[in-house]
Amino acid sequence: MSPGLADALLYAAAALAEIAGCYAVWAWSRLGRSALWLLPALGCLALFAWLLTRIDSTTAGRAFAAYGGVYIAASLLWMAVVERVTPDRWDLLGALLCLAGSTVILGTHRP
Image (cartoon, rainbow, N blue to C red; front, top):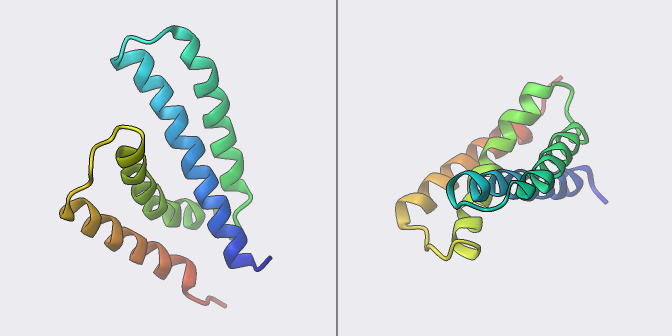
């Protein structure tokens, strides 16, 4: 598997883990779910953090910065699929701009 594809899969998995973990906290805090929801939240958020350490980058900050665009796009996908709220054109435009920024950060060859 190419490093670019591996990183894309890691970013996607990290986004799923982070959003699932944050949503579990949201469900407990805002939707009145049981405190037991915090257990999978902790596991998901730990998995998210670990997955980001697997990204092929010489600096944590660059890996995290590039992840931001992926997180935004994945959050809108979560909103559409799980929460059944369709992103509007401004949501989609914003996500595309953020993904373009992530591509610039990751796609630039550095010495």
